[in-house]
Image 1 (spheres, rainbow, N blue to C red):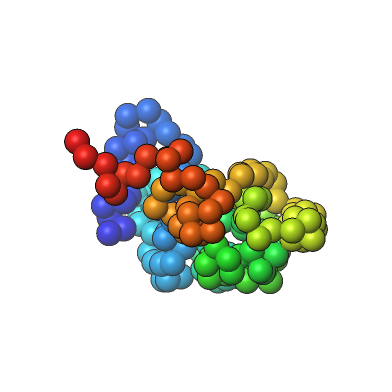
Image 2: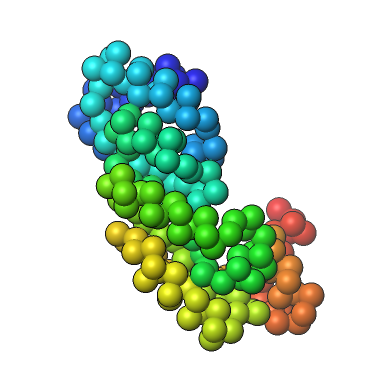
Length: 182
């Protein structure tokens, strides 16, 4: 609940005078604009001035929500952009579209919210052209900061299952946690 979250923020402030909070909750931006208005109102009521940031999905933000987030102290958002290629986004079952990334970053820039883009290269089906699309997308969205990760087939994830079925990886090189015995 909003009062509980603001209680925790107050505790952090008492403990170490923290003025910047980062919400690691990947679903924070799925909350309604009304939630962010009430959150901002509660911070004001308690006279708490904080800056905060969070993880976000490009398909869960719009101008109204971002304006309310900023009014409550949001200074920046970190988005899982992953790729500039729709083919690759679909391969990872991201459920997002490239134009949604462009819109989210354009809105953040207009509202002077900092942005971070998480990107990933190395899908087994990724081509040089797909990588070029990612490069061009990064040039277009102009994130303040970006992190590039290499796709890794960890046991239990979609990529691992894909690689196992196609013989791309050898099972003996990985510990199968589902079948491991104590």
